[in-house]
Length: 152
Image (cartoon, rainbow, N blue to C red; front, side, top):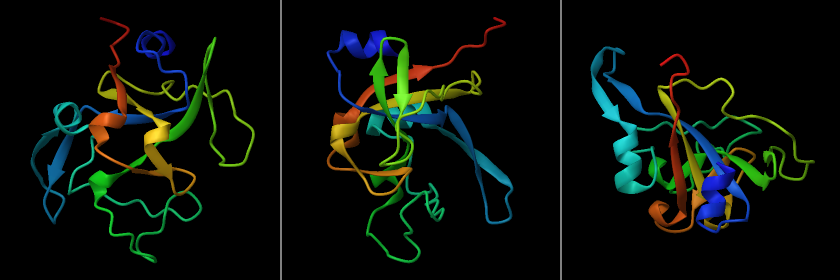
């Protein structure tokens, strides 16, 4: 990740979002009705979230849209981690006013997931884990990484 961001000349804070490459669409009874290619959605729109994406509303972590409606659509926001690039990789700024931590956000990911990297200056942090795009998400998106299966 560090080399890719150096190659495009980015040296500021980034947002790191883990994302499924493909998700299953379900109906009201949770029966599968299709799939959404999230990687294609990112390529077209700059975000893996669409009108069907959930607002998390986790108290203490996210903006509480159910208590204070923001007028934001699901694709206007992302849940991501703020990170700074270092010579060894990156450090996560999990708590807005806390000390950064060494934390590998890709450690438990599989080949079915990817990593989206955004320019943190192009989003507003409104809660510990929630960020709102200040413009077109495609302008904020710096890089997309697909993980590979280590066995193949």
